[in-house]
Length: 456
Picture 1 (cartoon, rainbow, N blue to C red):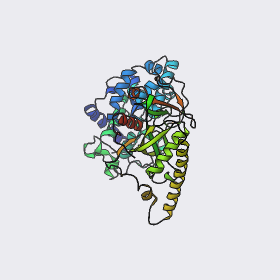
Picture 2: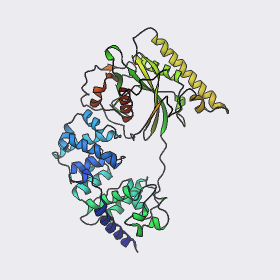
Picture 3: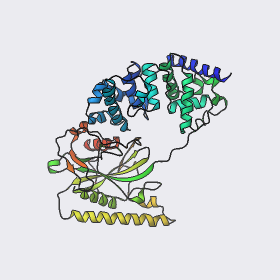
Picture 4: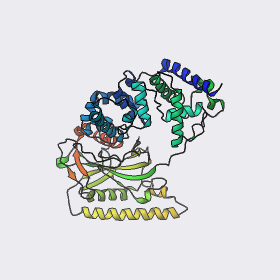
């Protein structure tokens, strides 16, 4: 069979399979361009099963382009909370405002106009134009490149721009006339359900008979993909500061800067443990110097708090960083003359810990990792809980936002050193503020009483 016959076999059999096996997904029930757009943005880096409830809630709260464009940013982020890649939500809202201003609230059908929308790349533009408007535009993502690499036995590195161009041209040639909407979704569906990354289900594949990769025994080695640089490890100390007096029943949170990683989202105060910890493996600090350093960092921001003990270990995985978190329950204290001494102890403890690490690294008897973890409970022990979250946030370099701040009854406090905004919040404030998933889990666990038995 020649190449043209192989292409024809692929397109015909794939479409026949899709019409029988396609999943009933909420955004497929309507050829609504806005619904298609929102779903495609949500599906970037996120599994379908995860997206469905988020999509339903998001469309319920922002049913039209106009509703999204006019919503406060804080509401949009709150509805996105837990999906990760929060720049997607900001870009989506910015693009909705573009549609209102430039296209009268109607999704444009011209390729250049769609591509000009903020946050819309070649794949998303192709998906919108083909699925919503049935235009013969290719929509090539990782799933599609994997399928085409295997079926046509393509050895080119899919991380290269030239390979993407090749794949887009090939995918465009495969689209049957008048069937772009179904074909592109069928191609995505095959990659998601059958031609999976690690264990492709070749025996149930509708195009297995002419799959060159399978016939050559290469289905497990394709596609060719350059390995990404591993994420940088960081050890961070996190404070759950329990309020007293007027702040009883509340915890201290802060808002991240206007730009950069997780811009403008809320979090628990935390500090990088030590430069020495940013090595091949982020090893924990011993409790005593960790708590002293944390108390000193809070004091530097103008907050007096005493760490009571380790509450939990947690991990937060970004595309480019892994935060290993030691989370300490702390108690708000009255300002007193003793606290500057705590800050001084923190500096001394920090320096001592760094010196210990350097000495241990030179010793063949004890590794720096084992020396650093000697005073900490093992993850999974009865003394700690462990929380792990994963969030791809490598796109978090953002422009300052001019949206209004979240409306809370608690006053704004400004950190003396970092200049960030701090607030005391109770459980009733959680539905008004957007948190990265790891801090949402930690704060929710605190208000649920998970750390009531912490002792130093």
